[in-house]
Length: 489
Ligand code: NAD
Image 1 (cartoon, rainbow, N blue to C red):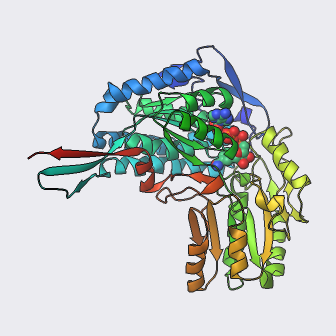
Image 2 (tube, rainbow, N blue to C red):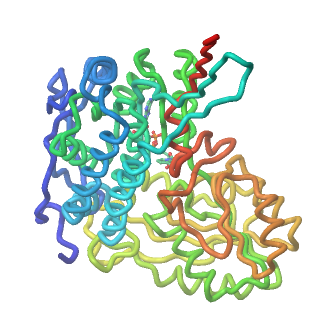
Image 3 (tube, helix red, strand yellow):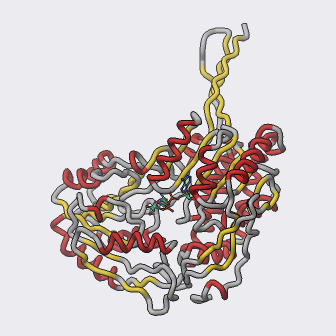
């Protein structure tokens, strides 16, 4: 299929309904929202526009599943098998899911295909890990047995964004379910169709009623109701820092914990001894992938002054050849998610407080009405410039020169964020010093996997949020410790 308009694609659409207690239900009010494809800006289906009463029903179904239902009675091994079955079904339907994701989110089909493999992998990883979370026994006083158990919280809330919709379902929900929680998911209103299909698959694979519930709708209505609900025992949020503050405030009011993953301004630090042939394509991909709408996009290139001219020349040549296009087979850069995000990113580009080095193009074949933005390269940027400090969430790279290692560390750590960083150098001791000095949750050396790696703990500090997703660390986040002291004699 080559660049077909969304209306002409054969899509396996999910039911435009919430998933509550394994039933597919419209919003109690009957309200629906149009789903618009970023590829052409045209509506192609609808979803439920849910309210507080729908969230109430979903939380009640989850509570019942955990406290009294079949879900709460399953052993860890049985839970794991269900997740593995769901993983296999996602992989079996990967092409349909990828087509749906590309139409709904606008991402190039090649990226959507990768996303489905990663989504399946999340359910596989956590399915296989479900019965491997062990407790401990603490040697205590004579006559005591002390156990430290890992227990699920109960009902977990999940609010996820639109940038990697299916991956986010796996990343947020799979570890929670593996630990035995019952989940209520509020996917993003801008892209939630694959979440609903995965929900349908969960029912087909035999998940008991109430284990996984999905409520679609607006953030300020359904999302707010979920984040404030007193029946939620732990909250997981990925999205903007502004909403992250609201989620954390609501969690504090309900005395529950939360994890926040709020994005970043991740630096790629390129030293003069770096293998530039290896580095430059990766640096470009790290900010072009998913049209820059990646929390861990490498959106700052810190370049040592001695190689600055060469690096800028090579980045410029690459940026100038990138064309935003409809998300067909050959697409590298698709549209942004919405008119709102397009305006926001264009606002950053038009008002940038640094010189423009290069601009890509928009392909003449890109459908009118789609949300396309030509990529932009800025530099040399002052480290404190807005374009070098704020998360643009678009295909925009800020180049910042530095003199030496000390200055590189200062600039790299000099934003409010701290999610991911990359260091490009052949010097082993410098690799170690830099990985020690960088204040963030993940450091890549001579490579960059924007967020990549289901097995790799991922998350940030400061404005990037707190708590860890992915890897075994996520299982610990979705569980709490219960210490049992048995005085037996
Ligand atoms: P957002 O934070 O508004 O949306 C993320 C999720 O939160 C969605 O599911 C949304 O429905 C929900 N939400 C919105 N308002 C809510 C509220 N009051 N209470 C509860 N839930 C609510 O993000 P956005 O406006 O779609 O994007 C804006 C910016 O956020 C982007 O430009 C980018 O900088 C950042 N962002 C970061 C990530 C990330 O992966 N860290 C993802 C998306 C957006």
